[in-house]
Image 1: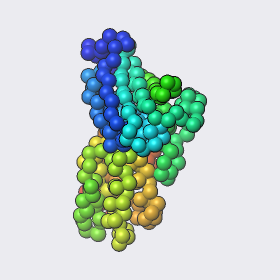
Image 2 (image 1 turned 180 degrees about the vertical axis):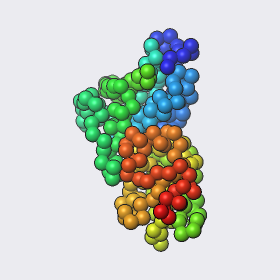
Image 3 (image 1 turned 180 degrees about the horizontal axis):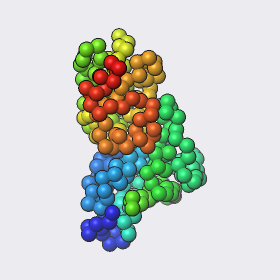
Image 4 (image 1 turned 90 degrees about the vertical axis):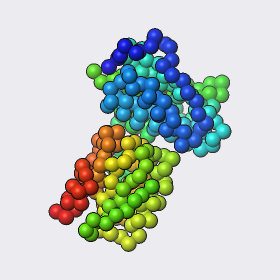
Length: 150
Length: 111
């Protein structure tokens, strides 16, 4: 639910950057949850955290290939109660079409309960209303749009 | 990361990190498996200190079950809201027996 603390449309609620390690993903999640706590309810915050952590883990593993000499930046805007997180990295562009994968209608079937991996993108789709990817000028950007529960 | 205790004939493994995520998942799996070398038949994993779990932590849990076999699939307890949400989203609450407390988990194994 939007609050009185919602900033002007388009104005970042926060921006932060960390080196590209799995250990630092929690710093991004903490920054997002801290900044969004006045704006979102508890369950919405949990979903943002789950989706954001899965997205950032994938960036570290795939775009940055587990190397810490890349940078992950996160910014967040809130407009009309809708939260947009932008995760930017200077790693390698993806080998697959993330927009096609991310834009598939619905999240798809629940992953096999006994699978040891492969839940990341599915969880991102569960948590975010839409996911969009851009790549150019040496930067990759993932736009994660979150619509709070009515 | 893991504190073991025995209650009756049940091994209770308490996870002592606030976030079980991709950075710690491999270590979690190895530490739990280290505790299960004697193949106990009754195991509880207590998540009450864990406030966040990602899909890598979940994958590590599944990996543990596959390694030890279904005969001693652990009962999970103490799920905090974000961890409970992760279990519900991924339907892992249907894969594992989940209880509220250690006592309830231990009792469920005695049924």
